[in-house]
Image (cartoon, rainbow, N blue to C red):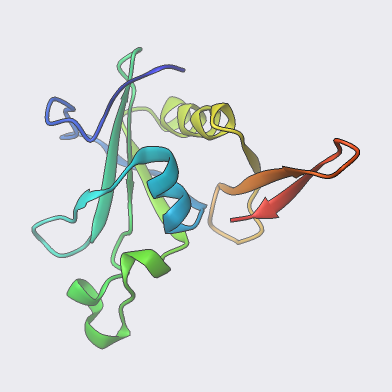
Length: 137
């Protein structure tokens, strides 16, 4: 699915809600989506990305209640987060469009190795024979 906007002020995120989660390193998200927006005013998130697809589906990515701003010294910095929450306006499309976007950027998607998360994002590397292998990111 083609993206209309990423982190654009015109994306209407009110009314979106949690749809799932996935495993991915912060640096991969920045590489694929650009720098995140600052977290929420209630200190429950530190980094957020909002995506609107051309079909009107909204996907939000955020680090829910993991940061020092919410947990104090027990919290972690955004660059240390690997489990990201996904919100959106459509349970199926918000997750599926996000997976398709990662695949379009050359990343692999697999069923998550962690209980409670929907999928993992992997780099795809090719050996000298052209055989693809997944590298967890």
